Image (cartoon, rainbow, N blue to C red; front, side, top):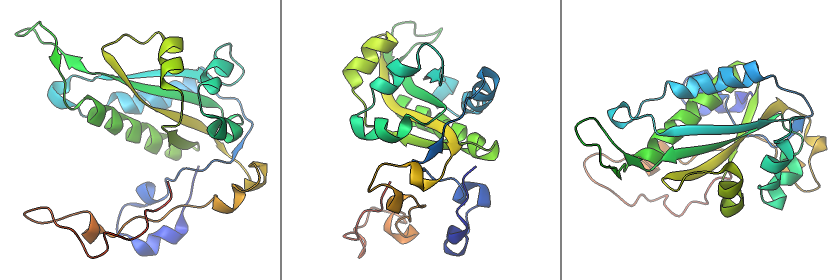
Length: 209
């Protein structure tokens, strides 16, 4: 379970939100099917346009036949730390939608937005249940799509690495110093009343993910 006490003085957001961050240090630990499904259950309850529920969660757990395949699709940098995790979940979303009144497939413009909402709920549920999560975009999309046998109408959005938070000393050289909760841009740099604005702090360095 991740904790970020230093963030409490920086924001009025609820503690369960502030405490969620994305470590890379994981201890080698197994995860049961029921434990993982309990996290994915939270994602099932995300909101979506017209309740279309476009998200799909494709997963492998450590010490199961699919683990090495799922790990191998990550870029080498992400493999170097994710190898100690307990599960990897690839998050896909259906990019078209149908209905009883309109059976022909048509574009679903919010499919990725909806899948992102589901991912956040999984991460918050994981944090409450004592697990740490780290979402990543760094993986070979072509290899992953082929390995997952993903139909053409589904987009592959991200991978979610899940495990028990470990000591930073397990990380490859150069990563341990970065193992801390990151800051965020100030609210006035990302929220505007009435119309879009270019804030004075626009050129502030982008915070680390």
